[in-house]
Length: 339
Image (cartoon, rainbow, N blue to C red):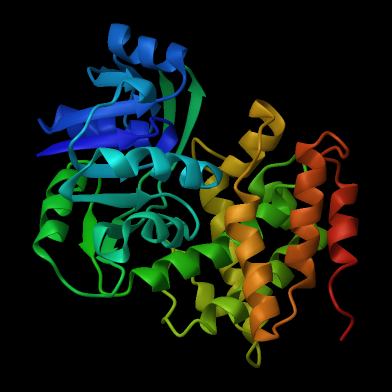
């Protein structure tokens, strides 16, 4: 099976390397010349929980890609989705399709450009970071879930499963939106605690960080649940635990305790959001993950003041107007409504 992967960063690069090793015909596409050159000359260097290895891959610059393309895995950051799909659309074969292997609700953007029938949903939650051109740190493994946007079961899902199962275990689901919205509950918490320079465990151990994480995730859970799709488990993280029912904080805190402990003992003690803000100093995907929570909350009449403040604070950090000090937790905590 021939697959073209647009975006050879943490997600796309990891998938491309492991799938290529398994014998699939994979072409990795990126816009960074140094990254493409490093992959072609040395192979993609992946370090971490699966050891330290170089994986021979085929890589090329986006400007050099020619059609027709049958199967495309789109793995760019969410805020690049609109531009990328406009470039990919003319290159697709008549029966070509795009699998959104990204964070956020990018399937909606892709479907607007090429049609829902040519768009496949995918949920990923494994942990990896692009450290430098040609080098990815792989931390933790998680099952990959794929599904049609209308919940149907189609032959192409089996084709996609064949490729992705060489990377990690794959589940074909009829409820892909339940995973995507469930991930936004996780993301609400993740963005909130990534506004300070500390590990996940350190921030969640701070009473302010814990209160902010609970509030942000609870707002998101209410908005996500209102979409009408049963929310699915995000690894060991249960988004349903953050729905405000009697005594909900006990189970929600258990989820946060487990998350902090797991990440503290892994190759990746920080969220990828922290990496974007602290190390790479680049835009995050806050507008593709936290902002949809706020906007859908406005549409549904569900207040999301903490998530709205998170979006504001993250933008200020991105713009260099705010540091990643612990006082950011005070700012976010002040947005929690007084009950």
